[in-house]
Image 1: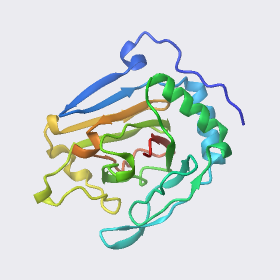
Image 2: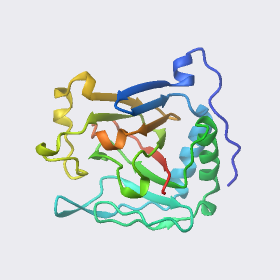
Image 3: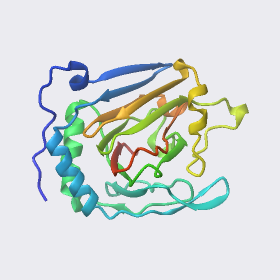
Length: 237
């Protein structure tokens, strides 16, 4: 399948078209572009991703126990990269050559983010409001100390929450897919928490020391009745 992708059409809402940048402090930054991709293009890609990607829902280990990951996943990586592993799970790396539309999306992301480089892609599919990702940071050593992660969303709007990492004395920052902490969200101050409603065709970028100092999640939401697909582009060093 070959697609000629294009960015979103011009829109009078300049913030939605050009994006907003949030300075999290201490060298951490988030950029959100609500209309990164043209609406109809994004739906065509959603249909391709939903039907053609070899999705799997693996068993992972969280806090010493095994559980089924609460979302589907797939991993794409350039040849020769170190193997990715998280929560006791090591995904099979598929080739970019197997899914040409993913390469076209990558080119569009890099066009919007001049100077950025990505050589791997973790895809996630949330099939309803009970699918989620718990609090975690993408701070694996293979991404380096200041990873840039570009996240493109398709389908159902879902809330994405960033929260300042707890101090080491309070228990740390382990991935918590087994236990979403949505009940604690409203207790954080505005300075220590940021929430985004990730729209169909949007782009969110985490930069600098965001993975060192912050954790993020996509919490369960009862009203999210349809499927969301998320592509997170990363650079493995």
